[in-house]
Length: 110
Image (cartoon, rainbow, N blue to C red; front, top):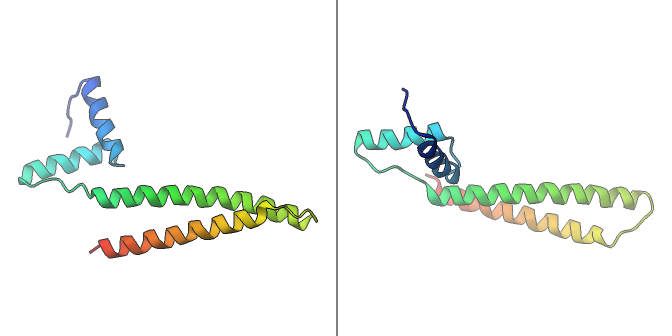
């Protein structure tokens, strides 16, 4: 299927699709199919918000892991850094948040 759009129309659709974490074509297909079947498009807004939270926590865990590795390397070289305890605590808290998010997703999914 080919749909002709102006640059402005394409930009508007792309922006909406990006906000919903979908490729423009995927968003358009979902929207068109919903219109064809006379239904409303399922946006799964709550699940998309949870996905965003998971992705943020994942990034935070990666950054903490890098810092924790650096602190452990310094510790192994004989240099005890006061930030080591902070990184370990931050990593544990982040993992706890990921566990909470996973449980929340399990409750919401069919």
